[in-house]
Length: 320
Image 1: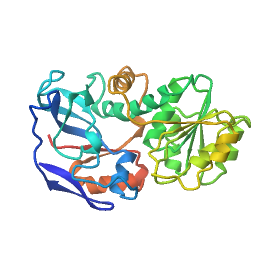
Image 2: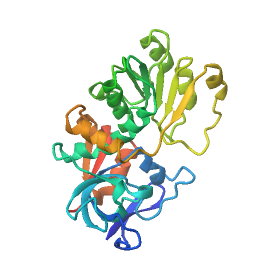
Image 3: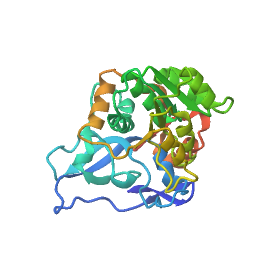
Image 4: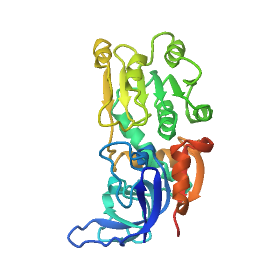
C-alpha cells in the first residue's frame, strides 16, 4: 500500500509500505481505511520540519479523517462500518492503518461527510472550552483565524459569548469569520490590534484571549498584553519547545490565568461535536475551501501551509 513520506522539509511523496495486520495479542483494534481527510496546522509541525521533537516517519502527517473499518478483532465495530477515526502520532497518511477501536466513533448519517469530518477539529475545541468557566456574556478575542480559530468563533458564539473578536493578518480569512460566529474582526496587518480590540471592548480588554496561531509565530506575549487584568488566556496552538523572551512579569502583575489544552476525550468531545453538526446547531461549511485527491498531497500541503488561494480547510479524497 501507499503512505506519505516527508523526505525533506516541505517535500512529500507517496511510497510503498507494508500492510497493517491485526495482532491477536492486542484485542480491541481495527484496520481503518481512510476515505476523506483534511489537513491541520499540527500536521505542519512534521511537513515544515522546523520544530524539534517532530521528526517525520513514514505515514506522517495526517489525523483528521473519516473512512471505513475493513477488519477488527474487537466488538465495537463491524467490517464496513463508517467511522471518524484518529490515528496514533498523526500516522494516518496511508491507505490503511491499525488503531484501537476506542479512537473511532460512528458517523452520523444525517450530515454530509465533509462536515462530519470536521467533528474531529471541533471536538478538540469543545475539549478546550470545557476547561474554562462559564463563557456567557464574556468578551473574547481569538488570535488567528485559520481553521481552528474559525471553529473557536463558532463554539464561543454558541456558548453565549457577548463579543467574539477575530484577529488575523489575512483579510480573506477575516471575511469568513462573521459567518463562523465572530461579532467583530481586526486586521492586524493594517491597524494596531491591541488598540482596536480595546476599543471594541469599551477599553476593558477581553475577558478571554484564545491563542490559536501555533508554532510558526510566537504570540503569547501579545496575548498577555491584550488580555485584561484577572483575565484568562487559552493557549491552544501547538507551541515550540521553548518560547523566546516569554514575559511572565506581565502575567504575574495582571493576575492572569493561562490554560493549555491537548488530548480530547473520545467518549465525550468528538461525539458531542458530531451531534452539534448533525443537529444543525452549527454550520461548519464556510471553512471548507479545497478538496483534492490524495495523490496531489504535495500541492495540498503547499496550498495549506502557504495559505494560498484563500485556503482554510484543505480536504483529501482517498481512493475507494
